[in-house]
Structure formats: structure tokens, C-alpha cells
Image (cartoon, rainbow, N blue to C red; front, side):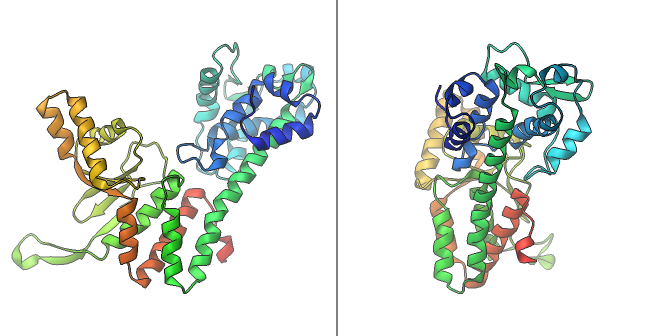
Length: 362
């Protein structure tokens, strides 16, 4: 069986130079970790899976000190207390917002989906206590827990370095006085293979600073009309899976959803979840916005199968299509002060997303 991640292969070779491949082939735990660590490549469609990985890692962390290479002793162990594990993985890099779903069910469900013939759950759950099944900690008489820990720690180190790459770029741009360079650097980050959360944060910063220069007039009567600037608000962290809309505008009440051109069915689901209130789609593509709109309408037409009420319901819910092309045009139109504000917004929301403290600026 092919080892997907090179860093995992290197660790296994170093640990088991003579039989690393057979160890991998015989360990479902190592194979599971290998399948969960694609995020080191920056694939925009790949989640980091920190909850699942940290659920396993937190048990391994205590196990290595208490039971490494002691199978008989471990077989009589009743498991680690939930709060002990929960507090530990919350203290890890990127773990402060993680919930308990992985420990309680998610890991076992996914593990069985990936390895449908397994007889035992990966994590044994017993009245608020948790431990890994011994089947997955040994290959023959070889305890593989230490190498699993090394793989997880290397994965986190690679993610940490990757996360700080953008921070370094932003710090350089904040120090720079060359506004042509600043625009070019942000434009360079707006490509189709940009990681999804980075694209969402950058697109928000661009839209926020673009719309704040647009004024509208509101009032309950001619005498009370007031001039107001458009304000864009980010509704939460990216990839929160909370069914929400990404950005909301005041005072005119527009919804914005950041997405990709992969399946138009997701666009219709977004429209459904806000009861077909009009949505502006911010799409990670360099295709012409009219082409995207035409393709989306064609998909709606096919889905409706000629049913007018369905076709009109979805077509009315498309307020605007915004692509990378429009975002780049709006960057070019921002003045120098707005460019600085945009970079600062990216810095703030990226640090919030990645849970990176501002120690570099202290």
C-alpha cells in the first residue's frame, strides 16, 4: 500500500529502516493518520482534521508514559478521564476552539467508514473514560504508539510553519512603503488554488474596504434621510460548518457566501438555508462572472426540469456573482490608506482564524 505523505514515509523509514512498509501495511492507525494529513499541501478542499487527530494524540500522549510496551498492564486499564484529555488537546496548537465530538463519536464513525472490515472501534468509550483499542497500538509485538506520536507532531509542525508564512508576508507588507508591491502581493494570493480559509479572509478584507467607500441614503421620511457608508461584517470563523452566511452588509441587508466552482448543488443549498433571500456569491475562480452565472442558471434549469416556480425561486436568489477578477479590480481602485486597512484586516482575521497570538508585535 502506498504511503501518501512523504514526511510520514521518512519518519517510518527512520524508525523501521528494514520493514517500514510492512509496518505501515499492518497498521490501520498509521494508515488513518496518513489519510487525514493532506492539509500540509494547502489543498483548498482539505480540512485540517485537528479535532480527530488531537483526540487520538491526547490519548497517545498519556499512554506513552503509562503503558508503552506494556500490553498486559494496558489490557486492564479503564481509560483516561474525559476532562484530562479535553484540557490537554485544547492546549495544543489550533486546539482552543475544538469541541468533544471527535472523542465521543466522530473518530470512530470515520474510522469505520475508511476501514469497513474492522471489528473494533479505534477509541473505546466507557462512561466518560477513553482509551485506544490495543489492536491499533501494536503490529505484532511492536508498539507503534511512539511513531504515531512523531507523525502527528511533525504534521502540526508543518501546519504551524505554513500558517506563519502568510503572517511573515503580512508583516513585510505592513512595513513596506511601496504600494505597488502591496497590491501585487495581495493579488498574488488571489489564485484558484489558494487555501479556502485564506481566500475567504482576503476576499472579506477587499470587500469591506471596497464597500466602505460607497454611500447610501436612508430615512423614514424626506426630513430624516441620512448619509451612511456601507459596512460589511464577517459572521464567524471559516469552515465553522454552522450553516451560516459568511458576510452580512449593513444597512441594506445583503448576504455574501464564499464558495468555489465545483458543484452548483451547494449554491442551491446555500439559497435554501436562507429561504431564498438573495445572495451574492464570492467565487474562487478566474472565470468570467457572466460565464459562471450562465452555468449556474443552466444548472438551475436542469434541476427544475421546466418547473417555473422552482426555476424562478433560485434565479431570484442570485443577487451578484463576484469572482477573483472583480476582487483584483477593486484592489486597484483602493487608495493607499485603504490598502493599509485591507492588509491590517487580513492580518487580524487570519490570526483569529489560526488562533495565532500577536507575540511578534508585542
